[in-house]
Image (cartoon, rainbow, N blue to C red):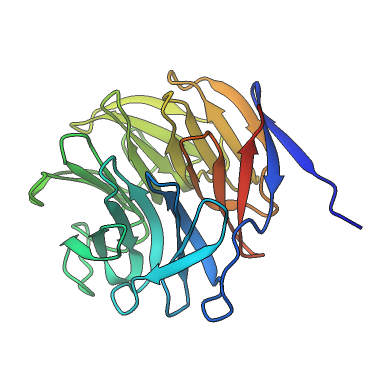
Length: 281
């Protein structure tokens, strides 16, 4: 008996739920799927933990194409990709941010490998996001409670944060995103909120009504998508007002990204899989 098709809604948008979307090879199966990004050609780069192939690449139909990162990545946490198809990867337990091309070639690294720093970059960082001018912002979230700001040439310019639940403090800053309005969005996971800062680290807003928010994705209309551990996906308008919610994952989506067609891709927690939410016309 075929599976009954599922449809979920985010505001006025409707999506068909396609579980087990990608088709890995027998030689390189899916491990613990942590996150994913979609490049300008529609290829999906899936970061995973606990395997010898840290990143698997699938074409727009879900067919396996190749892998990259073998021997260069210890522990994939979160990925992001900029307009030039440069992928920033938080190598959490190696205490580095690594930048790769879509061909898997390392371009640069931030932080000293396997050298954690208490209250300085890095101590199990979680995510990185590149601003349009090349500055890099990093959420340093498992060992430290900070956001770090780097210049385009890799120099540390600023650090803000601290342990706690007050304004500008964090308990597990789990993800960071720099949007087109020059805002720095941070998932403050255990404080159940998103904190919004300007580029200099001044808090300008705090958005609540989340339970352990994990990953941020902002689309080309500046709508903000957030996964949390309910599990659910929330869609916020550019002002931070709730515009829609759904339960697109079975047990929770640790990772989230979208493509140019408006489809959303989820890196699901156990059972490990990639789910596509296909936008319906």
